Image 1: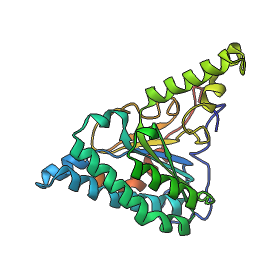
Image 2 (image 1 turned 180 degrees about the vertical axis):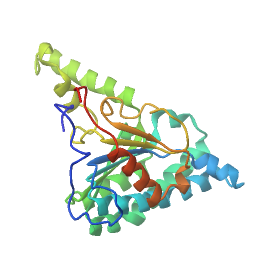
Image 3 (image 1 turned 45 degrees about the vertical axis):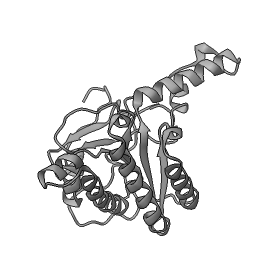
Length: 257
């Protein structure tokens, strides 16, 4: 999708096969999640940070299944930020080892469930084994269309916008685009995942109330939902509560009531 040409789909948008019996309306179309709190969850239990990250894999499975059942077409997870490269080598190595294990173990399940896996970010910085696992999973699940699960890896929104600006500058220099034609749509087409629609809802777990350099361009008209629940404790009930809150809001996109 190009940069927000109008109100994003979602809110009242419906998806296929939604019959939860939960009282929660259908949709939204795209949910993005900042999965925060693994380290604090582990510390409170006397465990290592790696154990916290490992525990954080189960909510991913649960929320993905719920999203699929609800007809949510896009789920984007802030998995590893550009700032996370500043963590210890041991923690980074453990994180990517967990990532490879998750991708390898879940690919066939994603394939059979109609889920397409994608990754976005500065992927060249990822360890070779992680890049290979992700590329294979993207290849295997590439024909699926029920849900697109996007993992934001080595991702920072400011870096993404700078990257898009450099691409457009180079295109203008080479005569491929008129500088006066560079608008919101042109920039949107040159982001790391240009086919990803803007999120209707951003959820952040762990209690902090900020977006932390995540999807700054794409979140322009997203609804924001913050919860104190740490990510490893975030389950389907919490997800449904966030969706119920979303459906209780009126989305005006700058227009009058």
